[in-house]
Image (cartoon, rainbow, N blue to C red):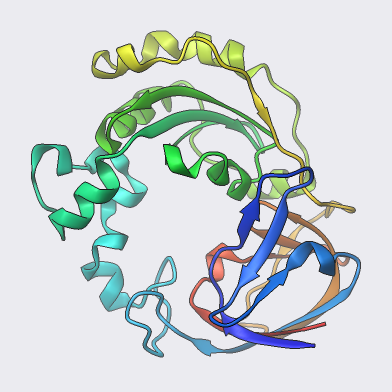
Amino acid sequence: MIYRGVLTKMQTEFLEPIQYYLVFENDFIHMNQLLNKSVSIKLIGSQCLSCGLDRPIYRQGFCRTCFFDKPIAGDWIMRPELSTAHLGKEDRDLEYEKKVQLQPHIVYLANSSNVKVGVTRKSQVPTRWIDQGAHEAVEIVEVPNRYLAGITEVALKDHVADKTNWRNMLKNDVKDEDLIEWRNKLKKFIPDEAKDYFIENNSETHLYFPVGQYPEKPKSLNLNKSIEFEGKLVGIKGQYLIFEDNTVFNVRANEGLVVELSM
């Protein structure tokens, strides 16, 4: 069977284990059903996720023009402390920025390769943790806008990591941590503007990924260099497909590529 479409990050269901779906315009693939089967991925072209044109992908699934012009790719996406909608100040499109920034946000701790701090919209819990390959996570604060979440993250990343080591995450080279203890240790570093939003009583969320075999030495598949790849799918973690020969493919990092999948 052959499927063809534009890559976007896999959609997920929070079950045990996590369920993954690769969604194309007119079809979808339940990726868990492909585990332990041979899968072929072939690069066909590219299509910007914003303008839909056949242009080289620059970053985050967007062509260069859309990445620098469209509000969906504003700097505040990656750096929430730069959010200004709460002040009524526009970056690229104030109406869009109010819609996204002025809603409840969560600052959290997640353990995927190490304990890290992160920010996400409340509506994206636990999806954000799944996408990062975290096997445990806990909320620290729930604030009413993205700016407050951003400045809290900036303050806390002086004391805990803010990035995941993707190789260790994929190798499952991770030790369990007491995230409640970490949360309580970090409480004193929360900025004054966000202290009232600290979450006193909650528990860790645990996540289980459909992985039958972890790669010992993960090697990343670059479709722009190797146009076609075929291998046995043995696991899915975060947004990565894991193959038997230690090849891993980051679906999210390849958004905007037009591919042909066959199995």
